[in-house]
Amino acid sequence: MAIMSTPTTFRPVLERIAEEIERTPGSGRAADYIPALAARDPRRFGMAVAELDGTVYGVGDWREPFSAQSITKVFTLALDLAREGDELWEHVGREPSGNPFNSLVQLEYENGIPRNPFINAGALVVTDRLHTRTGDAAGELLDFLRAESGNPDLAHDEDVAASEAAHGDRNAALAHFMASYGNIDNPVPVLLEQYFRQCSVTASCADLALATGFLARHGIRADGTRLLSRSRAKQINAVMLTCGTYDAAGDFAHRVGLPGKSGVGGGIIAVVPGHCTLCVWSPGLDERGNSVAGVAALDRFTTLTGLSVF
Ligand code: GLU
Image 1 (cartoon, rainbow, N blue to C red):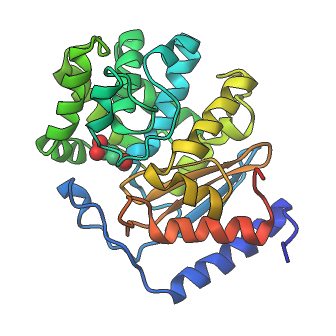
Image 2 (image 1 turned 90 degrees about the vertical axis):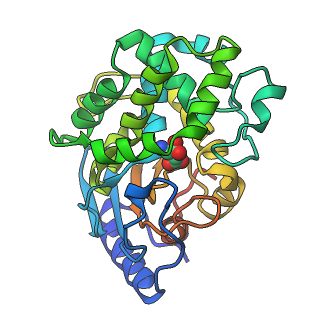
C-alpha cells in the first residue's frame, strides 16, 4: 500500500530506499568511453528530494558532486526555449529515437534534423542555438544551475571536458554531419568545446534536484520569476518522459512513471509536477546507459509514495 505523500514522509521513504539499495550489491558498470568517468565506484549511491519551496532532503552520497553529463541537456533545452520559443522545433524533433544516444543512423534519412533534444545530435543542435543567442552556452548553463541550486561553487570539470574532447570523434561526426545539412550555426570546434564543457558540469543530487525545481513549479524559477510558460514546462516534462532515459524511456515510464533524464555519470533527475523533484546518483550503468540503482530507487519511490504522473 502507498505511504501518504506528505513532505514529512519523504525522509523515511528515502531511508528505506537507501537500506534496500545497500542490501543489493552495486551492479552495472561506470561509463568508460569517457576515461575520466571510469574510475567511479558503482556502489556509490545518493538520492535527494526537493520540495517546491526549496527544502531538500537526502540519503547516502546526496551531497557528493558527480558528472552531470546528459542531465544538463534538460537545462540547455529550457534556456534555449525560453529565448527562441517554438522556432527551435524546426531544427530538432520531439520523438523517441529508439536508437542509442550517440547514434548517427537516423540523421541521414531525416535530413540532419535529430529526433529529439536529448540524444547527442539533438543536444548539439540546442547548445549550438543557445550559443548563438548568448555567446557562451556553457557559461549560461552554469549561471542558471548556480542560481537555481543556490550553490555558487558549481563548476565545469575541465579534466572531464578534456577527456571527452580527446575521445569525442563520434560527437564531432554528428556535428559535422548536421553542419552539412545547414543545421549548425557555429564552427564545429566551437560547438564541441561548448558541448563538452556543458556535459562536464559537476553537481550533487541536492544541487540537481533543486535546479530541476522550475519544472515542478510549472516554469517558475527559485526566485519566483518565470522562465517558461506553464505550457512550455509541460512540453519539456513530456519530452523527458518519452525521450529522457535513452532508448529505455518506455521501460522507465513503465517502472517509474515520471518525467526523467539520465546521464552517463550515473545521475537521473525526475519531476513530480506540482509536488517535488528528485535526483539520484549511482555510477553503475545498465547496457542502455541508465544507472541501475538509480532506476531501482526511483521505481521504489513512486511505488512507496504513490506519486506519479499517471
Ligand atoms: N558527454 C556525453 C556524450 O556526449 C554525454 C552522454 C550522456 O550522458 O548521455 O557522450
